[in-house]
Length: 235
Image 1 (spheres, rainbow, N blue to C red):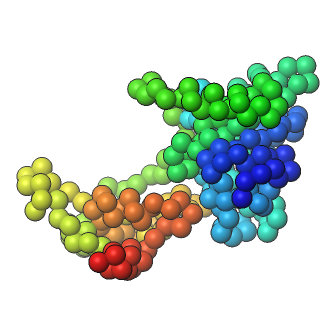
Image 2 (cartoon, rainbow, N blue to C red):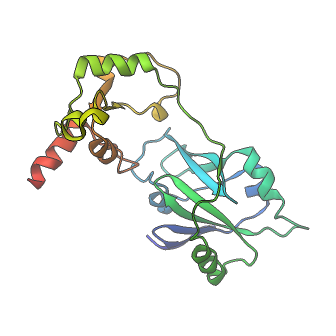
Image 3 (cartoon, helix red, strand yellow):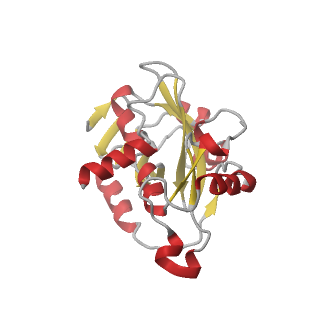
């Protein structure tokens, strides 16, 4: 749904503007109105959900989180290191707007707008962002993975994709020998703390294509059976 919702303006499926005040820069975040949850991929998420996302500003990536506190209350918070940078754009009580452009599934590029609601300026900024190859520094969260668990999963499940049956060595020869991707049935990013992994029940072996398709929808990760059903349906 596009349009104005409280202090947000939803411009397109991949572009939104936040009209800012002092609280945005003081608290390093903003309320997310319920009608705009679709933009962040949390429209079907339950109360208590904490969804990690990434914000890119001036070529640097910063971690952020969207928290759902109730049916009507949700909030986006970004890392304080980004907050310090953004505060530099606030001068003598004047607070610029922020534009968010989706550049990947859960990654949004942030632009500071000098004139409130200046959509023309937003468009020109987006059009200028067509160069590639610039070095980018990452400030984000990674989740520790166990090589022993991966090896155990392969020993248990084998080297054939558990969805489509693809085998890398059969197609690519020696370069594909002993290669398969290992998928966590429950994403590590959805866990609140470190847990013990059972390679038999918590891990599955997938080819690269099926692994990508399982994660294709950020707010709805498919199960093995669901992806098999989709493939069968297309056949």
